[in-house]
Image 1 (cartoon, rainbow, N blue to C red):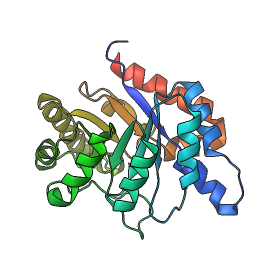
Image 2: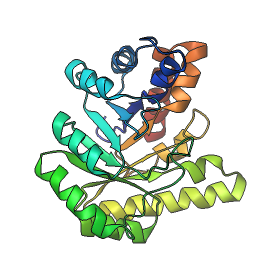
Image 3: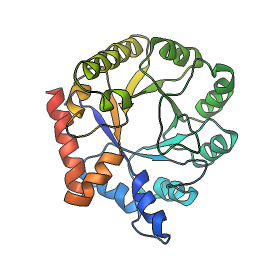
Length: 243
């Protein structure tokens, strides 16, 4: 399928369950391999500063085990840049991070943090790591990504996912316009956050989007149907949306 939309599966919350009891199970590496077998195109893992789910050893084991590209989500800190340079994942997605948040609550202010981000992005890019910025679908943030030389942006879909009725339609229009603007300016647009079986297809149908990254919902659904079935259904819905 020439316009096939890639699916990145985020395995963070397998590690969340493991860490609730300590020990080694459930193993996020096993989850990554299961997602790979079920049709995922990539694996995403967010190494947070407080190591609340993914830990350093998980990143090393993922890179040494999976055949898929790893999308390493990271805060814009010296510690995380050093770890990215050490492990050399396929891609590094810079996300905003606050220790007290349960999950990422919005997009990175790439416009306001230009001076802080520029040097970090240059170092990652010079090491051959494909840099992505997790941003709101906002023209000013896309302009900032262009100025920073980021080849990829990932649009935060949380507002779309949590809206209803006309508000959701408005958010979908923002995503559609932002994806077109990014692509027009040579930036590859991705999207993710809060996507489910029920809301993914309108986003997946946006023609310029190249990749969706989905995690929490797929891991939650896997409790009931298994990870293989969860990933395969999401893959099928995305393919159907692309026609």
